[in-house]
Image 1 (cartoon, one colour):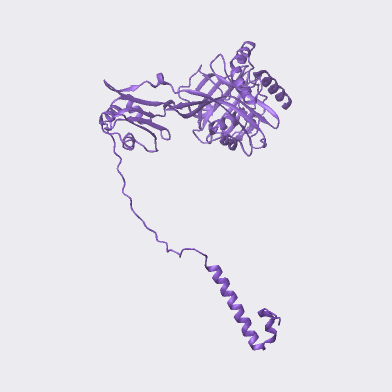
Image 2 (cartoon, rainbow, N blue to C red; image 1 turned 90 degrees about the vertical axis):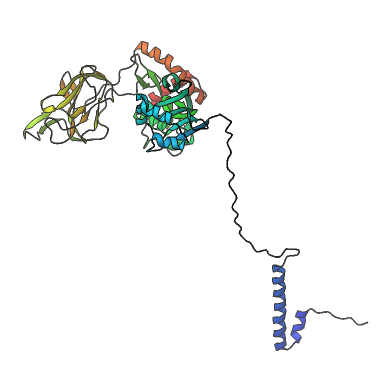
Length: 451
């Protein structure tokens, strides 16, 4: 029995002539590639390719049918746009009510409201299916209030908004600083107005441009007023706490016996300074206190105050609480206001272009109240404010004098302060999971350590 030796095709190539060997290699390689392509291009049981075609079909719009037998009104809550008039508002709210337009334009209260329509806030209305008004509430600028009318059996009438005061809710929020104060308040859902007020309140203790650190935290208790179930504006901050670089700063709002509200620390120390350094927000000093060559008389004289350059009409603020002792024209001072303060202090504001409306001698003014406007009356070569601080009627340098601190609370006021501020401190303590007494003690010790 003969044994047949099997050899693969590649083993036989060495026995072939060179030209036939090359031809066979090419053929073998070609068959192999065809098999790969065929294996790659075909899939068992795959359907043949189908060409895609875009089909656009217009569907008919089904009209909305309203039940005309239903007398329920349509409720609208729209934002008042800049440039809106009562006519454009009526068109947008689908109101067809000549009687309502005549009522608004024909009554004194209606005309006053139409002149004060405020953009950016909501106008609400209940409108009958036939377009007649049932109720309408317009936002107006006066006192951030609203003007509302309603239809009764006797006709249209104005709703007394004072009898329906918008509800005020107390809200509490806490946040941790990651990058900035406003970034933290945005993340916690705190309005920007609250963030701005926080920076203002703690501005004497914390420099918000350089002192903030990642990990600082704060808690705030504030009021929010609601209209039509939606927050309309932030009323005021009632209490706040800020922990900066490990130091705790805490403030609460306290209403004194005179009815004025101020912010105090937990131990009853007022955050207000007795005197502001400048009666103008933005200005520059053009002439200091002391001897100088007078710009008009061209001789050397004592300059009894400091000159602040500012445009005509810039508001001038009282730098401390006091009583107006003089308002009017006075020689080279031109229009001047003199305010008498406690402890023999007085301040003078000269060269004014005008006075605050209704300002008169004997009137009480508070720190920050506008009392006049920058001008160049009297001996002046340009618009500026001449500002003096006098002690026993003797002028002192406003930029270098050691000003007194705010008057502390009396013993009786301190007792009332502790009683009035305890509920707000309790809310902060709730946020911090501590007690009111511990919060007061920790805040005072932290403030003393910071000093």
